[in-house]
Length: 149
Image (cartoon, rainbow, N blue to C red; front, side, top):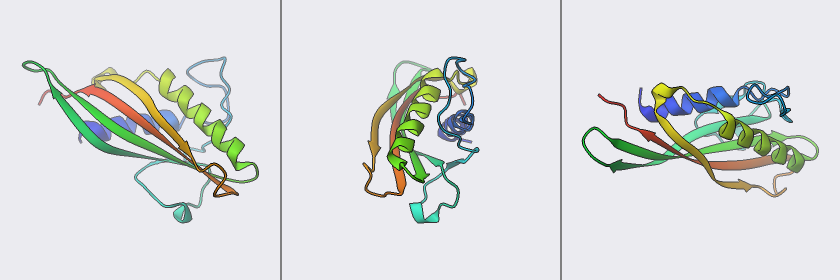
């Protein structure tokens, strides 16, 4: 399995912990959203979704940085697409964004993944355009070392 897929799996596993209860990463943070483990790999359109809220994780462009012998870094752009349905969907979108920010910046990923850094590059929302649905896109930049083969 590729490094990108392993990292996506790790991100998905962390996001599945968003359950409306106290965060496992900090006892001071209470999740505002319960994803009911509706976090998946891939991309779907809003009319294909039956369970809300849902988050879909995809990887995009990869850039390789070759340093010296046996040291290669990769920078991958990943996108998290979040779908909400219900009254006050924009408030729910804000809540899921806060929960995801908390998870991304609080998670300690397995060291075998060789992740150096995950940052949130950009956050976009539908701004109420899809009411009573809501959508947010969170773009991540993931920097990691390439596994030795």
